[in-house]
Length: 147
Image 1 (cartoon, helix red, strand yellow):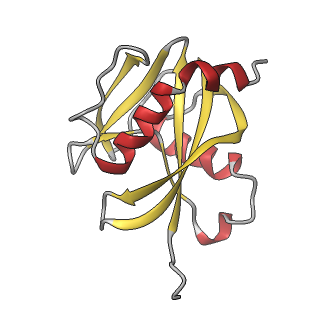
Image 2 (cartoon, helix red, strand yellow):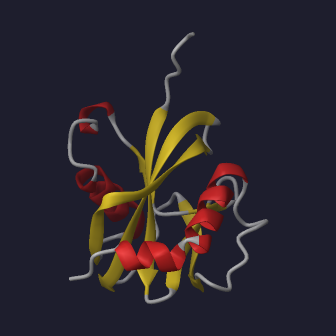
């Protein structure tokens, strides 16, 4: 067996009540969630630190309550370069701040978790992750600590 080498990407389901924030990747025009890849220096840090860096880079200065425990893992492909990755999904409750998109994304919306149809906006593995999140929303929310 030859071991695989994968990038690690952290994705955030940012919630405002029963709405989640979705983004559109500027280059591919496909759906995306806030977050991104770990750098080599971040691998031994708590995941909340690189996730906070990614959120600030992509969305500006926001306050949110992050559940520091991953909600679930999923196979993923990095849109730029189609690199295989392990996706780690996190959940946070949005608190304050104005979302200001970076150059990576050209559109955003808050959509109802229960009624949003993710296909064809999301593709492949990220589509599977969004569907998984939606289908387990009530159970996931019941396990999400709130402050």
